[in-house]
Length: 141
Image (cartoon, rainbow, N blue to C red; front, side):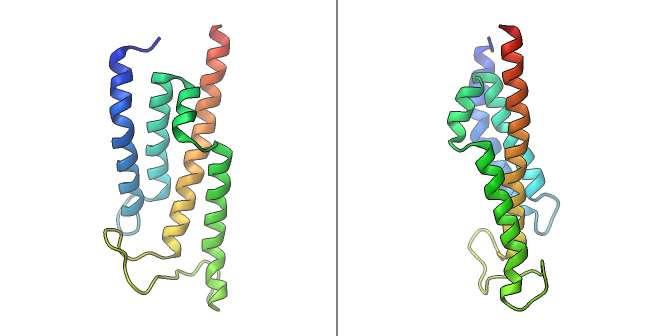
């Protein structure tokens, strides 16, 4: 059984790590970071929570299945690559909104692609981590 210190730390670190993962995701346009790195940080936050409280409770906190995260992420990435074709531009060419959004900056298809990668990475990593944790729980019983 995990310690009280681990449970308390996981409870407070989860929102901080998720906020940091969004920061890394948004920062990825101009500096190192982006969807992959942000997704790894978010997945590690949920993995830490799962270690402290168990896989079932971590799944309840996420509120969406890993398979759905992967599917939505792949759909967003595909839309971002096909969207320029509707504007008679080349495949995967960057399309940008006319006005930047407050606190985010210029938003376009590269951000949509990064968001898709973020969701796919979170879904895949959590599927692996939760499957291994559930397997470990059954072996210990």
